[in-house]
Length: 530
Image (tube, rainbow, N blue to C red; front, side, top):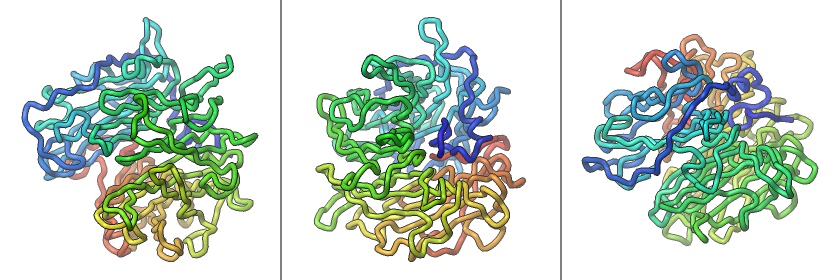
């Protein structure tokens, strides 16, 4: 059974690292909030995708939430490597204009997301600091959490001409309170809705809620912003599936497209099965200022959309990822594919081997399971092993949304951070699948670090936990190794692997690491991308 506050980032088997993820230090802190800026940059941007300075070049974001900043351990930072060789900028709470200061255990950069919040066509970076202590009425609220929005500009991020919005839960949503242990900002998702409005979802999995006169600790919530509409979402919200219960941890994971978004609640109890988990799908279509709930997904019963049986410790929803889906009879992406990881799932008698379900979501809320991925599926490389935690992280990508979606266009990368590689215990691997292929095990590929013959240069080392950090786009898969024990990358590393290289099985990744190619030679957990 997997329990504890490491669900999104690590897992019970990674005990030493879980301790790093839950540090709560009674150091006074503050997060001065103001509304998200709507003013445009002083000069026009002309960017595309993740482009913070509007020069048309892709900019790479890499977090190091365990980094020491100004001598403060585990304060955390984010580095942005500008495209076109224009240097690297470091963002942290030490910037003079961000209204805060680095504090031990804040873990700035634990989560991050990108969208155009103000419509100036320069991308804006949203950074979660879930362990930020926030002073409310003179009382310090430990681990209440904060979120920073760094607005892009022709001069880049963090400059005097680029606003920084510092948000707490109450500042964003006047109907919510900023309270200790809320973990506001633990997860983030953002984008532009089909309506053209920017949207932002912020996970608050530590939120305590009252139901039937009883306080339910860690029930969880999501704060949702679309345009000028702000809505707090819980399992007590109209139409949202489920019941408010202690330790549901709704909002521990988030993902979305322009039409839908999904929320993971890995602590959800299904019947008497504690921490079985569920995922909730909502539409960006607003009803009374709030997104429309579509369906809740769990393993409770036939017809729920997911195969299997709900069991204690499955933690279904610990990771979620969504991408656009264009049906053959449509000219645009009306549907979506959603991958849901259940890293604590037992496969037969093998505990915590892990599994992933991939479902197709339609506008009506109808959901169809299109793939089930685990190590017992015929021809899938590897065998179920205790503590593999397959599905601790997932990322889906549609490599070409201009054509009807099919097996040739969709890729699913699954982190298996507890997998042994040779004699290296818990070195971790990433497995890549074509989830719409009728024989999903026929073309899967396993990525691990090796000195030669691997797409990921390096050496697989005990407790690397490769696969704990994944993100992807239509062209590239990003594999983080923030907990690398290999001496050459002991400060962490990030691999960028084009999908074409993954498909071919030959070539190599671009490796980013502290001390190389202009990236400052300092770090503790460089490589956190999701």
